[in-house]
Amino acid sequence: ISADLTKEINQNFDFSHIFHLAATVGVSNVNKSPYETLHNNLVPLFNVINYVKKKKLKSKIIFFSSSEVYSSLIETKKIKFPLTEDNQIMIPNKLINRDSYFLSKFFGEKIVEMSGLDYVNLRPHNIYGPRMGRSHVIPELIEKINSNHKFVKIFSPNHQRAFCYIDDAIEQIIKLSLDKNINKKTYNIGNMKQEIKIYDLAKRIKKLLNSKSSLKKFHVTLGSPYRRIPSMKKTLNHFKLKNKTKFCSLNEGLLKTIDWYLK
Image 1 (cartoon, helix red, strand yellow):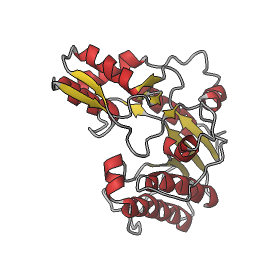
Image 2: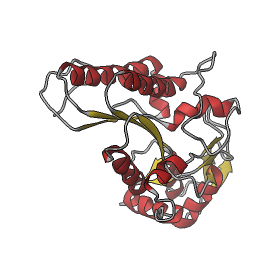
Image 3: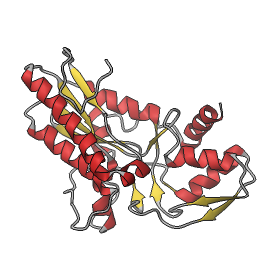
């Protein structure tokens, strides 16, 4: 069904699980339209919840939040790494346009929690892979470095991230969402290993592309957390997968992603 979720839902459906990902995303989009971001990310959620309650369905809401909910804590250095789900989220007095996204996701979590419905809140951390558009750091770097420009600007070069390949993320999402014993809880989705600085990530992509571009460190992007690495203890320990789960290595994931974008 193709429908505008900012309007009241009139279709008839009854699903066991509702995966709610509808949202305005992308730093440039959010910065341009902070109010619309709040509107687009919250009104559809209210409409989905209202529909479930009105029809008296037993659907479990799988709400996709974001690692951005930790951003203010990271900014004020009132947090320890890796990031655990039990941190008290903070809203700063002075907001920038980019904050509208994290606010929409944090409020979304609380709306779901107060709805009275069954739910699982998921906080994805730096998921990457094929088909992720062109406005995220890895596809942006692939495109710029592959173009063999003389100089490629690397923004926030010393900021650190732990990236998670899409297949690994989906495995976590499916197992958490469909487990009947999991309800009314919040989980990180991601990979807490292979943390890397953005500049080093660019160097790795350059090597994989065999590019002759020269990498130049540039300024920090406004609102970008200096570090982001999730604690995966709660997610992995729940399934006792700690020693069984073999995450896709960063090099392997980058090669798969590069291959898709070059094609």
